[in-house]
Length: 287
Ligand code: ATP
Image (cartoon, rainbow, N blue to C red; front, side, top):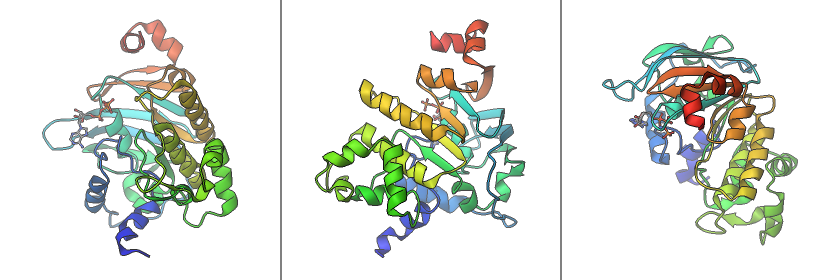
C-alpha cells in the first residue's frame, strides 16, 4: 500500500465523502487537522447498531469562544424520519449537521443517538453509521470502481454493481471506455457535478448507514440531472434517519418535519403546509 494513502484509508473506513460543503470541511487538509483535535474520550465504547433516533438537547456551538453559531438548539428525530433544515445563509445549518459525526464538539448541551451521548461512542463506530452526501464530492485519481468501492472496505463486485444501479450510474458506466475500470478524476475522465454526486450516493448505498446527512446542491444542475440525483437521494433516504439541508421545494415538502434556523436559533418548526399557513419565517423564505 502506498504510504501516502494510509491516512486516507483510515478515514475511508469511517467516511465515504469529504464533505467540503459541510462547515469547516472545505478542504481535505482541514479534515485531517480536525481529526487530530477530536479523539475518542477515555470512556468511549463502540456504539451498538443504531435504530436511528437522534436527539439534540439544547445544543450550543461556537467555532471560537467568541461568537456563538448555535444557541440551545433542540431537535428530536425518530428512526427513519426526514428532517429538512432551512434558513438563510449563515444561519448554522451546516454547523448543526457537522456536530453529529463529531467533526466539532458542542460548547453546550448534548447530542444523543438512541439515548446514548455521542461523546461516549468511539468515533469509528459513530461515523461508520453515518452516511454523508454533500455538494462537493471528493474523487481520487483512480478507477470509477475504486472510487465507489471506497464506501465499503472489501465490497464485492455484486455489491458494487447494485450500488451503481441504485445510484443510477449505469448509463454513465456504459458510455465510459473501460466501464467501471475507467480512470476518473484529474488523471482521467472528468465527471460532471451530477455524476460526482451519484458516485457519492453509490458510496453511501454500499455503506448502508442507518443515518444520512444530505447537503443539497445549490449549484445549478440541469433539470434532467437534478431529477435523477433527486430520485437517487430519495431512494437512499428510505428507511434511514435523514437530516437534509434543503434547497429544493420538493425535498422540503416531502420531509416529515421542517426546522427553520435563523442566526443559530430554531425560529419555527412544522410541516410545509402548517408553516405556510403560519405566514412567518418559513413563509417568507419560501415566497
Ligand atoms: P449556508 O447556507 O451559507 O451554507 P449555513 O446555514 O449552513 O449557511 P454555517 O455554514 O453553519 O451556516 O455557518 C454558520 C456561521 O458559522 C456563519 O457565520 C459562518 O461564517 C460561521 N462558520 C462556518 N464555518 C466556519 C468555520 N470553519 N470556522 C469559523 N466560522 C465558521
